[in-house]
Length: 225
Image (cartoon, rainbow, N blue to C red; front, side, top):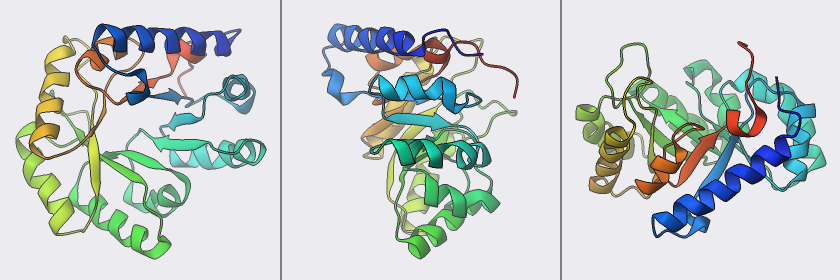
């Protein structure tokens, strides 16, 4: 269920991003707010668009296909980011619809993305997802395998990798996971870091995050869908 005033939630998050950047000695322009609109309908999203937000994140290709074309027809300049796991059989739709994909995590997906990027001549910004906690229930490349995977994406598949994404374990302090992701990015020459959600985006900014993925703090608590 959305908050009564998601545009007010957006304004609060924007102020908190500015404060976190100032505290970290960073330019707020270097942090992109990805408003996570998964499970929320057009009625909840429209006020956030009206308040000036243009970058949104979705977890599922099918959900995004169902609701975003109509919203984008009414407002130009929308950028969609896929932040959830991507199945290989959804790659064609994902490349067509999304401007960024945060969940590249296996060789078969890299191959499918390379094929569709070539076929469509459309190049979404690609993030490799790092499973910093090596959690078996989560997708993502294990940290010790990250360098080899990034190299394979580049050399074997010809992909342009722009950055890394991580989701720290729920029950652990996020800072070490953000630091680890940042170190992997630095040694692989990657400029973008998709780190931080509603509960920890201010910490992520201190560790160099360039993309914070915030849903609950803007839209309120969501259902289980």
